[in-house]
Image 1 (cartoon, rainbow, N blue to C red):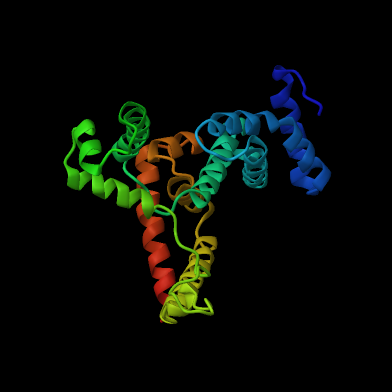
Image 2: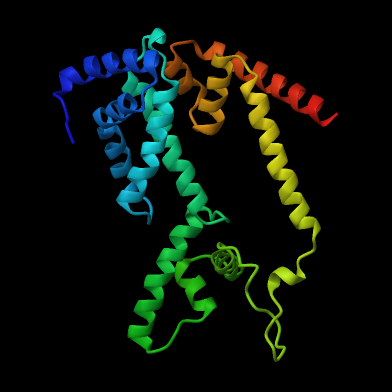
Length: 258
């Protein structure tokens, strides 16, 4: 993959952007992606040590964020493309990790205690040749027994059960958990999808800067100060646009419902 000298990267990227905005040719977009692929590598390397996903998977996800940044970058704003693209790359990776992560989030303190308990069990077995009781673990951790039981329950329930899992003791073993779930749950899921579609429609009707601010703050998890720096405006302006944008979204979605 061709990588120009650092001092020429910005100039070459901007030149390609001017041509791409005029022609919309895919090969030009791909050239911009290749020139700035280092941004994806940097973010993927940062996150690979904080999750169980492979480096290659994070690169692929990061590239999706880079492509979104290429499509939304505007030469008229005068921003460096690298500064503009990083929140999109980072946001794409973060959303991917959240979707792949556990459904139930466990407090950091409980995660640390859970890890300590693993070492405690190993040391206890070596010393006494048996498993420690819950009371003994809680005592070594210096926490109440009730809290240790709650930690255990949290770890047991951190992953959702499959609706295809077999339940009951019937001889045929044909009863699935999904068979016992009431239909309204499925209907609620459908309504949720409809709400997401209405939200996307409402977002598309907003003025571009207001839409960008809402995406930075709520979809890319940037603070209002970080969003202001990316867009070259004041924090006060971001705050006002957030309030205005949310009000317009609410009004638009209520009109669609009615």
